[in-house]
Length: 205
Image 1: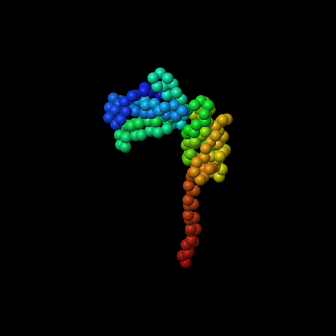
Image 2: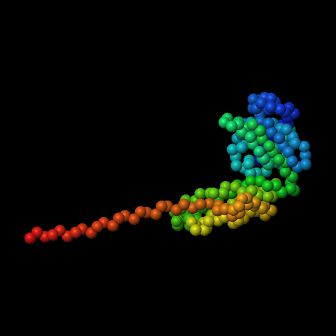
Image 3: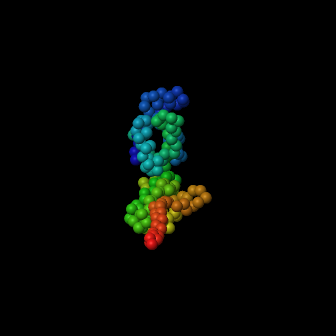
């Protein structure tokens, strides 16, 4: 994805406030052994870009004053109750340096799995993105996960995900192999009560 920005010289609370009033959002670009650069970005373009998953997980092309730089989104500050982006941080990435970033998991073929076809289950994703370590060129937009063999008793974990060549998946937390999805089976039908056998009426004498 590409985002266009311009450099800014003014700084401080007052300057940032005036910048937001004019429809732009202040930001900063840092890293790669270079000095931090203050930038401003059109607020509406940035706000809509932030709604896209790939903007948070992909290597971005940031164009500042006509010069393009590879960056990743590092931090975003939102207004506590208004739909307003207050500040944004980008980190430069070198083409040959591996960087950690978030990549979405895309689940495929769940509708063809035994869990759905044979067991009539409902599949719910539990893990929607993973941290990966890779160079910008090798960082994928998403990683596909095939669920065609999914059953209610065979649930794939994070360690079963096959990352592309040159990409390493990083597991966080104590559980290094969390379940990727959950399968909810339909509730068992309640057995109907057995009707009592009719009693023979006594014959009248």
